[in-house]
Amino acid sequence: MPKYSMISAPDFMPVNRLREIQNQKFINVFQRTYQNVPWYRELLAKNNVDPNSIRSLADISKLPFIKKTDLRDTYPNGMLATSMDKIVRYHASSGTTGKPIVVPYTREDLDVWAECVSRCLTAFGLDESDVLQVGYGYGLFTGGLGLHDGGQRRGCTIVPVSGGNTERHLMFFRDLKVTAIACTPSYFLHIIDVAQKIGFDWKETKLKFGIFGAEPWTEEMRQFIEAQTGIRAYDIYGLTEISGPGVGGECSCRAGVHIFEDHFYPEIVDPDTLQPLPDGESGELVFTTLDKIGMPVIRYRTRDITKIIAEPCPCGRTIRRIGRISHRSDDMMIIRGVNVFPSQVESVLLAVDPGLVNYQIYLSKNPDGLDAIEVKVELTREKFAELGDNVANLEKFRRQIAEKLKSTVGINFKTTLVEPDVIPRSQGKMQRIVDERNK
Ligand code: DLL
Image 1: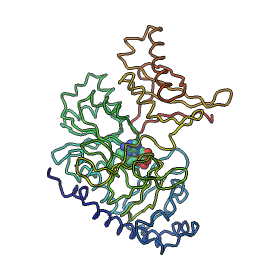
Image 2 (image 1 turned 180 degrees about the horizontal axis):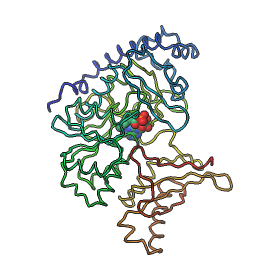
Image 3 (image 1 turned 120 degrees about the horizontal axis):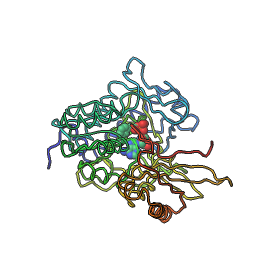
Image 4 (image 1 turned 90 degrees about the vertical axis):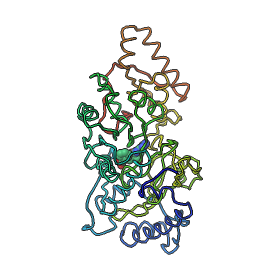
């Protein structure tokens, strides 16, 4: 049995003990939220739920869900469940429309968050000897400060570069003997791109771990990143409303994301009927925060689509896993009746050529009012040098992609090849879908 630090011991707790803890914490957080948040009392009254009927975790399905719009509508402090003098920090998630969702944290909330990120790092294999460079943005976004505090808790040396400044990232990788980089997968693609342009040699670094999350990314993308740089890439998951990065993360088996269930209770529900789904079935991930003091949420709908993997993981962790988040329900495009996700497009492109990592999907309306979908695919420098001035070969390559998209996804994509450096790069979350339907 490998040696684990105290901090990761809860990951290996006997399941019945874990369920007992969840049960006790659930009753406590439910009662606290009911007593302290008038909005929640009204929600229960509107849904005819008698709070006395909630006696254990088995009763959770009697409770209504909390939606993203509820947090927006109660902006800024309508969901606060403690007094303001206990709040030591705010973070916010920026959404695409309207007001942001702001989340207040107490000292205890920050403590649980740092513990969970630290448990993720332990599961990836980091320890006190590691030098962790943080390339997630610092600020209201939880990525930067989340990895910073968690990495420090793990005892790593932190290099807080934040997003941007790509050449400085590369310089520090080499000069500060950085062993781990944490950033969005799309920003790491940009780092790889810049490294290639300036002739950076990855072998001159000690980089071993990539800690990637905050947006969906595919297995094919993992293989591309690893082949280019020689690191091992790990998935870290989380969302601001629940805490930030570190709601879950992979272990060395890399066969799903372990959820820190002693703090965040997961459920999967059918996004249409809202009925709970059995383990193994895909649906919307819902969380109840079991310890949150500042802004607890009970049955919060994440809009992330995944499934619970109940089988024990070979790593020995007893906390359950979820499948990688392939997409958010908001990112699902319905094109002529067919459900399409950006991750399907990504898998197809990378299967045709592992370098086709820069792409964007455009949605528009045909003159007849039907939805049209176009994928713009950026050629790699090598492919551009090989095909650039040969129109027939370019067309052949374009058709190869279009046909593979049609046969895999089931609809016709307008497929356009573009030159290197045309698709906008991102320092944070990459916008893969450009929706021009309402323009
Ligand atoms: O993205 C927190 C985070 C920071 C996670 C750094 C991991 C690393 P939000 O900005 O609130 O918080 O966005 C949360 O991002 O509901 C998912 O849709 C998506 N997301 C986060 N991690 C992953 C992942 C942070 N590993 C939203 N895979 C979530 C797929 C992810 N999607």
